[in-house]
Image 1 (cartoon, rainbow, N blue to C red):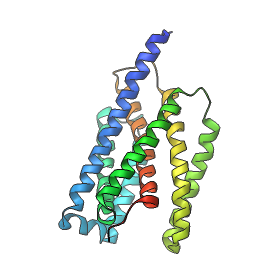
Image 2 (cartoon, helix red, strand yellow):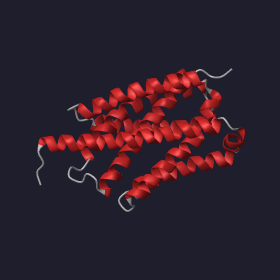
Image 3 (cartoon, rainbow, N blue to C red):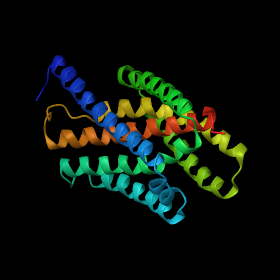
Length: 229
């Protein structure tokens, strides 16, 4: 079935509104959770000072992400939403540490800077006619390199390497924001608006952009955030 250009534009706009709405809700859940937990020692101490619990949360977050991506076609839209929101909540638990390490002013500043950079690159990815596939593949390879180097530096604990990785991370996640936006637009299926498939597509798109934004924010905070004295 052929769709008119106006139908394609209208459905694409509505789809991205849904994607950004889910992403925004995820960020709110993570931010509120992190802020509330950081204000109560009874909540953050078991998470931050218990190595097993903290590692367990990290493993759980990875399982939630991979589970959501791999099982997206086999689960219902409601389950996909639940997994996404649960993931955002768990991220909020682990992010509570930033409120203990950095001043609230610098967190707010980096949040704003991240939002500005994310917005510019997402708009670029949405409207550009340039195929970002090749650049995206390079950035994904760089992402894997960042993960491996980051795990290695957990053992080495090298401050210089950590600084370099943060700079590379800012570049990587800035570029991935544009690439993921373009990919989400290309993969969106026209004609299934309002269906469970459409909702799951929006959730997966929101997850990708959520990860780009959170990681960009954390890298900028690591580079420019002001630590509490």
